[in-house]
Length: 220
Image (cartoon, rainbow, N blue to C red; front, side):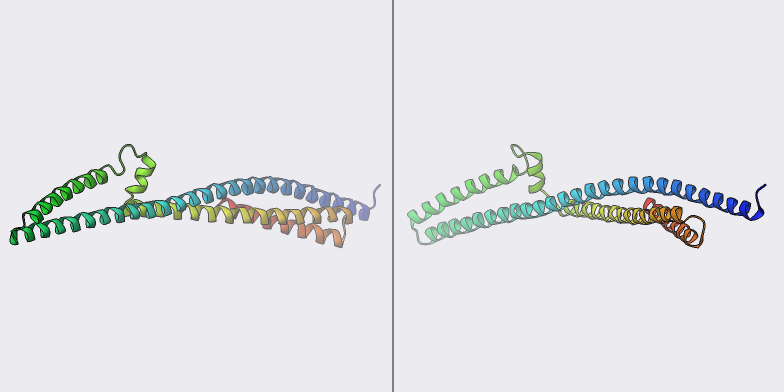
């Protein structure tokens, strides 16, 4: 027959072993969940960062090249306008001074101005068309509305990357708590039923609970 004190100690040890076993199972499950969250969040953050970097580079290129195309078009228009004014002034001066040579030069210059203007207009008209490829055409013809839309998308990718990184950090912190909980559970198993063992097991339960909270926050 087992003495009452011995039976109570045996029941206490069984409860202790049951709690330790359940805690080990909880730690294993939480570790698996947090590992999946950490890997998934890391991959999501990497993809979002790469997309944000690509959009930032594309925005810079489109803004710069479209502005250069606009500046170039304005510059050629100014040149042709100056040539037109000069030819008209030369022709008028020739007529006023009855200088046939100056008048003829003015007319020739005016004709050249018209041809140059037509050629430049034809060149500007093909900007963004064949044989230019679609990507280069998009760079040349980028509008402010398109740039603003791409900037909004780039900001969205940055926000996604930051959110995924935050979830990854939560998962890593949760895994750190679980590692500590595993060490404390092992220590409790060594110390067994007693003040030190109970304290270690209670601390391991607290660490596991914190890891569970972090897992929930990382999923949300």
